[in-house]
Length: 369
Image (tube, rainbow, N blue to C red; front, side):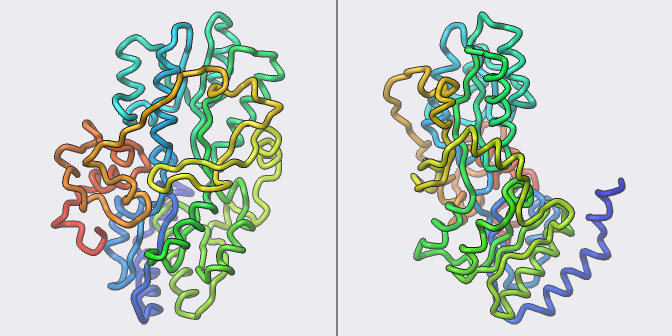
């Protein structure tokens, strides 16, 4: 398939692996921030094909996985209300909260519907004025523009029965938090191409300069990632710490200005709780005061919530790259995609799901684990 097969060429892949091996004179630890990149690395076995000493660390790049338990518990409390149509992308339905998930809530009678865009939720609100329609708005900078446009469209239509339950997170503050951890061993980053397609990469430049870490904006296909790793290793070997763009076919330094304008109009930057990382200052988005009428958290008082993580789940350590799925005693036995104990085993971008789909076990994972 044109525009796809050309980024999966095995001959070019072997050349990039050979080039990386020729460059590397010492071990290096590189973190990919995006869960989609994690799945490509693990599914294609790239992390196991890299030269000895080049170690990929899987970071907190799964937006479903870093959504805090409180948001999930709040979602289920709102969904259970009479007259509420609760909408979400499908990958959120089986993410476990403290005691249950949205799929179970639907089985118990809640009107929970899968949509493919927040605009679908706006359309439901327009068609069904007798219902209150709530959309679960989670994700990184990538999904924020569409959610902002949904609010703007709902405001233009004068809809009073539409709202967002917001849990947006921003990538640069998470990277900073990881780098400031005294136990952090990450020496370079692969930045998510789709995030940078929206926001550009200028926000990464102060991070590269301050912490002396190379950051390479990278795509999602095997050759994208192999070239990104090669570029990162070259910087490390040369003692450089810059932001470079491998994903030139989709990303510009300034990003997408109309998308940024929509986000800045509808949202404001705020502190945000991340699963696995805790509360990080200025690391999330909340609805601006002018659009507070669309804030489901303000519209629905669900009282105080007591969140409880499953005692066996080590998702926090997995999301920070401190541990891998095969370190978990429940991985592949009590925790599977059919019976998940934590979000990383559910999401299509979760590290545990990636390892499980690739058949990784403690005995097969090797250096990749």
